[in-house]
Length: 335
Image (cartoon, one colour):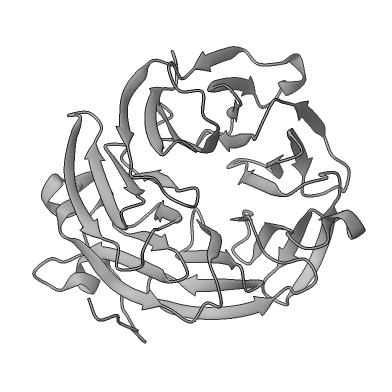
């Protein structure tokens, strides 16, 4: 199995589709890896939530949520519990967020407050706090243990939210290319720093911190990607993508050296952010990939549209062996 610390241009270039899941009844809205277990969760337009074992390339469970739908999703610390945002009938029940047990398909708690669709959702890596950003121009801070909202940030435009990997800082992106940083323990004191993505006032649709906390990755509605220094806000590099009908997602590799992104041209692109060069491009085989994440503990990433693909390195021992993956029931496309 290739160690994450050993990622090189050649290993990245060798990535290929190792497993395909194509029985979704619509677009995959969001997905998330568990931090410590080899699990992947997806939420899709067909109102399904699906749990996958990424070590064996296997679908473990599917549940349907017709009343609320399934839009943004993220794991809690427990491997069989998730937070999921609703997309149906928000004006009727107001249950914009649900804390769900995938194990027994049970709702553990509803979180009410957002008046519009939630477009950004993230869980603290260190405690039971989580954040949600909505088209109602509010970011809400919650605690899994209580129904009541713990804090509200009123913003301009569509918000995107992210915690750093230590859970000490969170970032909020807002209209006009502004990024505000908060101390997660004292967020009520307001931001301790504000960055501006100079020259691009498009809304940020996604924001991520690198694992080492040194960089931030922004994806905008104008089909641009920026990597910022997380301490000073300076723009380290930027990449332009082909226009896409849907918001796209980009991801850091766990070592923070590479950025992988979808594009409106139906390809996946990889850049080395320290050397500022494009490493390679691949045909995604699934059209425009709207969801993209690298697994936290493996040489593996997933890309999704209405089809989910697991990408692993194609080394001499075979792609599955190289990533430490056993594909028990592999479904393949004609690539």
